[in-house]
Length: 265
Image 1 (cartoon, one colour):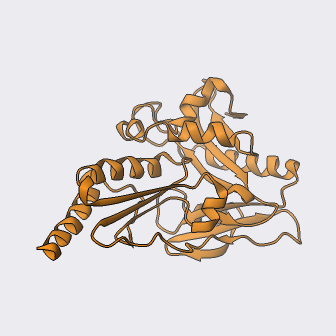
Image 2 (cartoon, rainbow, N blue to C red):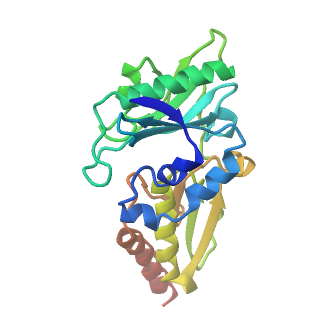
């Protein structure tokens, strides 16, 4: 196994998170590719784990924290670390040390770049981006937000601790309409899928819907709202991890549309 930097040869594999076989990935559109084209010259770093047969089995992407959806200074932030674990496609590469090797390579790279620490997020439930796994790699929890944990490994004694970016506000609700608001950054196909499904569901009731989209790749916009990727329907946050189905999103919107019709009757 070896860790390599992303090159044009592997970009399409990176854009689909190594899941070329996935219908969901195709449904998520080209948002990640567009995001990458804008972020690759702003400090974004991507490394891939390649096995002895030359197959890419894992990836990590990280960037200066000043461009990330958290608060911090002179640090780097891991957007995600992912090792393909399905039998479909390229097969299961988990439990072979790829994740540890990718994280270690990122730490070494960040230190060389002069970063004062590496920050990541984790979930307390036992699936993707497990906080417990990062703790085993020497990271410590510095902030909490629901099921999510913000963890970091400092490379300097005077490094300033990071913190979660808090949602600051939401668009005002327009009376007489069902207000649907999506925040989309572009880096995560799962969240891009939420946007695509919500757009499709909202279109089904277009005359009754106010559909707001905020593209938070614009960091000033991200800081203004304090939300990177999220879905709100009538001001209520809809859990998006894992992404809700189109049917579920449509059902929620339909319920609010029917309430609106009853109120107008």
